[in-house]
Image (cartoon, rainbow, N blue to C red; front, side, top):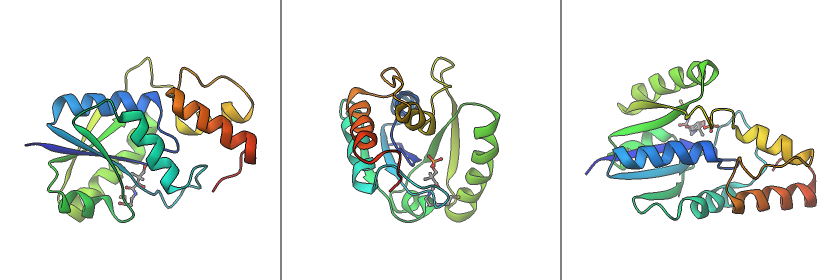
Length: 164
Ligand code: PNS
């Protein structure tokens, strides 16, 4: 049984994330999507909301489950005896960040990171752009699943573009 961990902030999950997770789920027997915290980021959605939107969006994938992770991803991967971390790469900017994170995770937990190149048709999608477009009342329909689009619009209509 092979297991991959797909970690991220998922604030919120996008169609780009989902493509990477689907592809991880076709390579590995099981995938755990780890909704984690990037200490450098302020989030629009709180932890339970990021978890719930991610879980709803991936419910159709039978070998994928979602967990909320509060500690280090390297510790989580070791505790689950995962075979690899899987990350999507949209271009050089992502590689710049992911290279050091991958090396650190191997240093911390002996876990390898496998990089999957983003689908070129989805490589322009980023959670930060989704939130910005929605804040200016642009359409995010083709960037995120329907449940996420409604949640982003509801959150921004109720509170403006304030981060939790
Ligand atoms: O979607 P993001 O914000 O690029 O995801 C980054 C995330 C949440 C995966 C990363 O910050 C993370 O792994 N956080 C958990 C704490 C941790 O393990 N930090 C060390 C990373 S080297």
